[in-house]
Length: 346
Image (tube, rainbow, N blue to C red; front, side):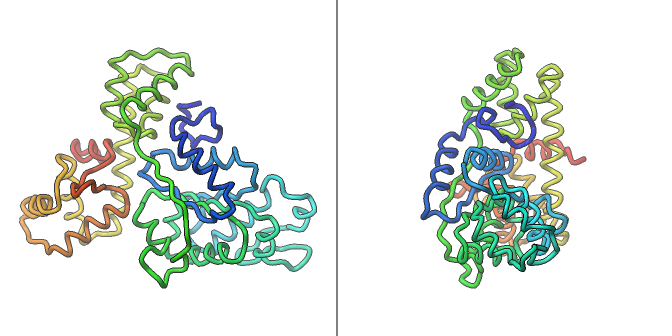
């Protein structure tokens, strides 16, 4: 179902990104490609693209969503890996019989002493990690570097916080475990206006519900090509009239988008006011660096050094709250913009 709120699993439920789907499938078949990166803004379909491709693949795979880990640590990651290893489709019964239970740490309880590495070398699953940037600083990057170097497993990492994902990958840091490992990259992106229209029309047709051109235009104008927000609207509109569904989707989405920003700000208490001023100004108007810095200083009535201001911008860019296009900074999420403009903060 196109308007199902969960990440898609089947090609029949997966809209658009057909070229990305084809490309990811080709990388999985290419023996020379060992590491694949899926990146893009929040709610632009990365998780669905990953799951649909894995389910289409004839290969064995392990999928770990970093958000489902008990703690963000290498120990927790390895425990989850062992747990998932037991349920890999297509494992020989003889191998499953050797895996008895999961232990916290780097080994599992087996009938013969056996290490994780021996199991990975034998099973050769695709190892996919959703929202991998959350594992920065946990040592999982060193684990993945060892998987890359010592097994034939392919690795797929997704991330919506693109700068944080780059840090996890060791970009520009020769001391980082994953530095220098060659990878292929696929990017997801918001839908163009006509693609947004086609998605909504297809979803309502599938559900047997009619929607007017005016209602379509209103939803597309408000939600601006973010397929996650369009899906939320479509799902709500199946049980209520489209105008009410759009109001509810916009309000719920704005609250969710702002909660993500608030989590980011909570870890930056000393500079919280400067970050908020910066994003609120961008909610009104996209700007170049110098224009934006001047506007923030006027708003706060204080001087900010060039280096400090650049650091604020880089942090917001790294976490995907703003984007930069040809020297112009802007907010890419229409509902975060709405939350800031209308002070929808929960």
